[in-house]
Length: 502
Image (cartoon, rainbow, N blue to C red):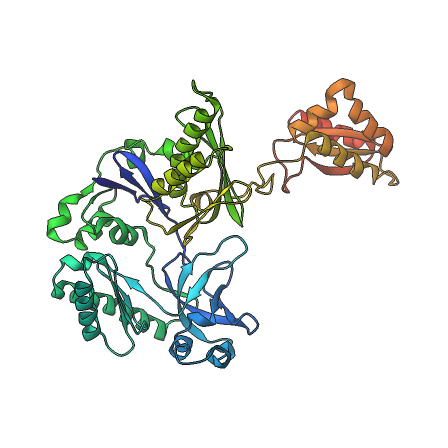
């Protein structure tokens, strides 16, 4: 049975989805994250761009969200019977400064703001309630057309005005009254949202659909195939209240002294999920690089040489890499465009075998995945629906030294930068320069009988005093000029600081 471990003790809530004792997904909720996918927010229209048929809406995040015309309730009411050229402009549907209830459908990413819709949806265990949907849809996974037609008829009979609903596969085994009661609960939730919006001031969070508890209950627990272990009594009682009596035995309160992630040995797997290199069992490895546009996974044979022919070695490595890539994509919650660079294979049968393996490996992923196949350059191209930030976006920040590139300037380049800056001061009246430098630059300037330092002093016509520093303000810098002045005074200042007197 699937087990969900919830660590709720800090502001950052976290969880792990275990299958057969192994982590398959990480779950996180961070404080003050209004703009997570699924949240409903009272926003304010800040700008309207007719050329894009879109509006920018303040939803309380660092960036304004963007709302396209086709995501507006009034536009959807018009579009079915209106020719494209006669469709109303967004200028006629929205005004600048207007308050509007919106839902986040795609989280902000990189330089892009969150994507929004006015057509709100509230998911339950058995249905998705659409306050302004104006249609009934039934899961195609139900056993027969007759069953789908019956549920469609019931849904239409229950709805009022422009309401809509999507009936999930899980509803097929439930009685009508149970489904209707869930509809009523979701109606009441949206009524509370509308009431809060009527008296609220934008930007304001109206409904937190993406809270960790909500997601776990909706996406993992409701199918009856999961256990929850949670380390805080308040959250434990909250889950129990939302759970029917038959399922309450599947919720446990963790009461040990040690941290729950430590007890379940989850800290190291989490740290590994953030690494760029992923080692495979056979000694091969993956390198995972994410950019704003796409994610690239590179497959390398590494330590694996195999006992078979080169062809067999390559195919076996690629097959294992396909499973590992699928696992990492799910673990890291990587979305958008993904390219996988498998080791080159000459035989078409081998290529198809690896592609088939990848399709099988991603079959258990809850997110929508489309594998397009091989590009003309031999890379496998695929997409995975991106609704929220990936694991590294949630837990990591760009490095202040390397600007998030993973690389810093070479020592030779750092020496040259200092030399140019010192040279630019050659016409000043100052006799000396006192400079804070990081260890790589400090040692480079003192190597080989201080040859580089002497050259800088000769070109600048000034004495150069170096202060070893562990860190400097300003990303990517190896040095910072502290002061200019009289050689004797700066030597004294250098001596005091070097000896730790200042």
